Image 1 (spheres, rainbow, N blue to C red):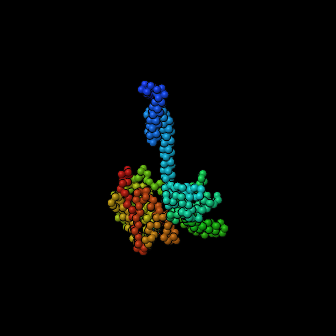
Image 2: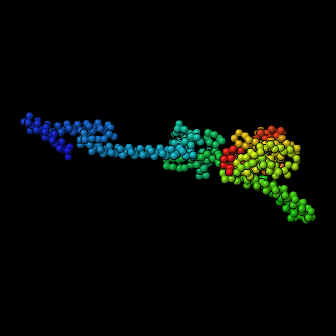
Image 3: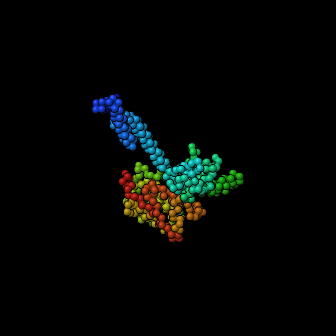
Length: 425
Ligand code: ADP
């Protein structure tokens, strides 16, 4: 309204002034039109300048173009806000994709790489320089071709990573509009775990089968043959060894499973342990084994007490002492020490036995690892003793140290940290 008034006033004023001066009606009208057009031109000029910076706020100097400018500016701000939120959304998706452990390679219809996430960089070795490159040119394993151009039976494949043969990838294909996505994950650890589990089951079955076969053989003879009571007694006597063997194996397996399933000690179960007394009780228990009259010496710091789970440490000492006896010749000296040491109490057991070559030392705490399988079995070993020791010590924040020389002897030692004393009541 104001604007119309301005234009009208200008028209009338200039017509009046020029009409007054020139006394000509037509000149007055022309002057009115000219001045009105000049004002319109000025407003157009302001509008034109504003369009160069359309995000600045339009003001009244745009005259009749103000409302057009407002509409233009509003739609511009709206699309700007939309672009911003779309960008934020795409950045968010990008960061989600980059933080996923699975690799994604997005391919177009020509199977060229469109984009990859960070995991694809580490699992496939792809970088932004590979964008627009044919995927099959970079992932050359024939299985990838089967995955991309084969039929449904190849929808999931297992392949070595193109950058490291040791890394195993499980890759699948997802069809999307305008292309495909190859999704892959690292299954190296999973495979290792599965094969360890399979090995474990195979080992347990194998270990149980031998005594079980012996038992079944004897039982069949008892059932099918006529025997004197004396012979029956003799056979029953012989059943004891394989039965005991199966029992120790199952006992050790149960102990190991229990220890493995709870890697941390429950503070409630920690009590003071008198190492000297524990050593004496272990020696007493193990004595039937030491029939070869080993010379067992003890050097214990009387009154040296640390916190721990007594029956677990007892079982660790029992395993170490029975090994020292088992793998030492008759008459050999076995030295046990329990002494204060930096950071705790140190237990050490040294024998003059068969010892072992360096390559075995790092492996003897593996389940069922034995240097001489038949020798260990003949001596009643289950192959699980040192695995049990390892787990007991891990729960006590300690670890087994082994020093050994083949044909000379071995020393097994560990330190129980004094920190447990604070927890022990
Ligand atoms: P096992 O029941 O066979 O003794 P362990 O787990 O206790 O099983 O020990 C694993 C292997 O480590 C043994 O089979 C043996 O070869 C070796 N070993 C353990 N202790 C000794 C030792 N004191 N001297 C020599 N070899 C040992």
